[in-house]
Length: 111
Image (tube, rainbow, N blue to C red; front, side, top):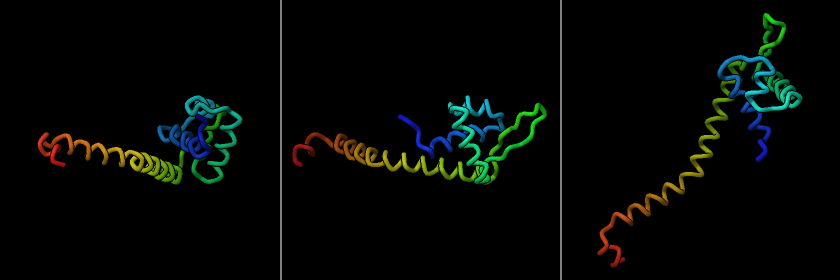
């Protein structure tokens, strides 16, 4: 299933949370085409979520900013809450089934 734009941005931020990286390494770790990655990185830079830093070997290094880290944490929390929202009805149903199964057979026959 193709990733949404938001998932692609989140994936780039997730790669950079661990440590600043060169462009090629981000492309590899985020599993993203270089042309597409350049466009997404430029957008993240313009939003001040990622910054480009000079490096000793003439290749730029990209790093997540404090603002980027805050956005990343917020998006991760929202993703987690969406997952919980989908799981909660299943858990409630399992609890109901569990309580029915824990009743003695005589109680179930009377119901």
